[in-house]
Image (cartoon, rainbow, N blue to C red; front, side, top):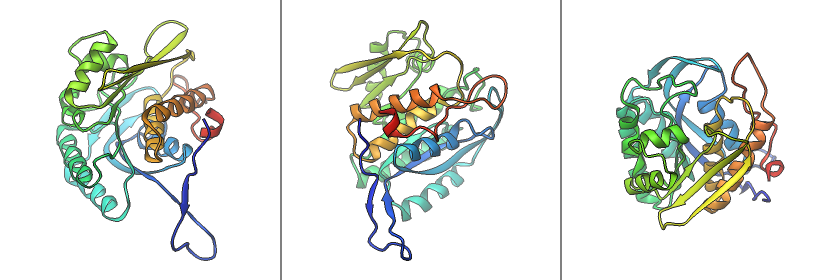
Length: 285
């Protein structure tokens, strides 16, 4: 799909050089020192699709490109302070939520969403419900499902992978049933990602609160990737921030993510890093 214009001229450009105003995505996510996932992935993916990320760090992690060894949640007061400074100064066009680290942080973010939606009822909120690392390492010291529960009712779109959907839906394995559970919590849209499935064809399934659904199929890329979920959710949020419909944003995000994974690079044995910076939304379309 063709890319939309990234922004419009600012009223008061700095110096003699014209500048472009970009739509901003407020991001809540963890810091990954390997540079493969979390806020680093979010910043790259959101920029690649034409928006600008405002990253609020929720948890510090000790991890490499394969395993998470330790996690240190940022105190909720500090999460609040980071977000307050951004919200006070910068228009927010969308919100993307990844790892939150603690129930206290989730409740803090939920309160911020109530505040933002009071002024912007249609503000898109993309929730990537990360419950564990790709190898199953814990990313919170609390019950992972309980941690994100306060956020489900505020999500415009929830993007679980297959294991996350099972965990969030009390063991249900049918995607339609899983979507119904998540929509009952309050989500308007659910995208169940098929990356953890089997076979040569990957199927991503989108469900809407009005009962409509759609599935996208693509060849499964072989190998393991670090930060693929962050990449997809952030790309979708970046497109929603620029006014795409939900379907158009999902399609653009899936295309971009597929190309980023297809051109992934390695930094060490194990999971590869999606090549987010060399693939633009135009190339992925």
